[in-house]
Length: 254
Ligand code: BTN
Image (cartoon, rainbow, N blue to C red; front, side):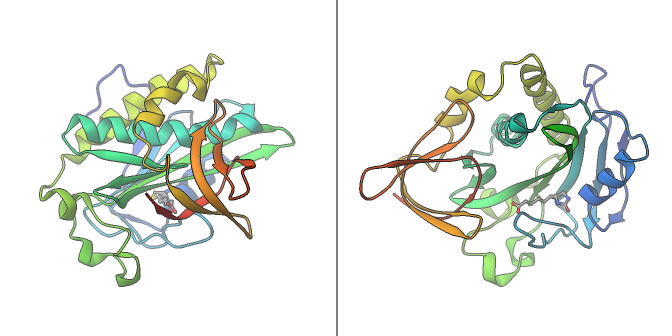
């Protein structure tokens, strides 16, 4: 795709008809000097990776890409990267008329079902992240029947939910522009706090009863807030509030 010159992210951009996983390629190439902002994409992934060691089905018609962040940051800033990436995706989809919500920490939902997941993988040395790969997978222009049957109750595609195909190069360009802007905020020390209001305004998780998997533990309660660090605040049945830095919402009910 032809990207506007002002976009720092996406230069260079490596496209291929097929890769095992764009995250795996980006991590591999990072070790060989791939520059900050480079994007690795593929029309099809044969070994796409999801969070929690799951596989990510990645057929033709989707958007499968990874962005390399190669500016050292503190390990505790790393979760901000994925929170900001979900905001960039939400903004890009909203711009083309796809109403998307964020499910904490970084899934994107359309009509209540997941259409996009984000997987950040990083190389850290002690408390410092040397580089991070942000992998973004969007179920864009294919029917949801191509997703595994066992996830179709909670996952869909933009094509199935909205009834139209999206212009992928344009959406990619917008995501990269927005990610670039948001990343600069992070680099300038502003962090997640400066966009927390926007993030909360589009977060579907707030106010719901949730079950959150944190490692092997399940935390049950009501999601009441996201703090300046992006942690989810869950009010437990007996009134205490747990602050979850990471995890996955398995279930939510309004
Ligand atoms: C999730 O489990 O929600 C995260 C899914 C992340 C999928 C994307 S597709 C591009 C990149 N390459 C991968 O192998 N995974 C990520």
